[in-house]
Image (tube, rainbow, N blue to C red; front, side, top):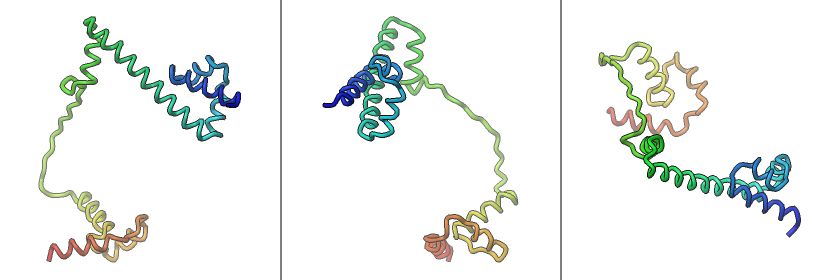
Length: 157
């Protein structure tokens, strides 16, 4: 194994312990510029670095949960509240929206126009002579929509 590969392995080992690039750089004496250059130039190193970061983050998450559970056992209210808000659906923060809505059963003229244009673009309704420019500006093209329109027309007949 080359010296460069040994240094990289030491860096990755440090990154697994503490998933902070700057800390791993300081512990191994490697500059951040070198690390990010290696990451950019070497796909294998880049993948290994991503895996080391993920492993390190999992380790810190496990340690954090352990500390949180210790605080809960010590009846620390903040820890108890945090756990419940994030782990128990009954205690999660909720947002309640209320609104008054009157359904007149009819679309407004502007709503009806939007629906008509959408149905024409989906080729469920035929284009009128005035709406030919809508189809020309349709970025999706119209392939496959003819079958849907035909099905819809057949179901109405």
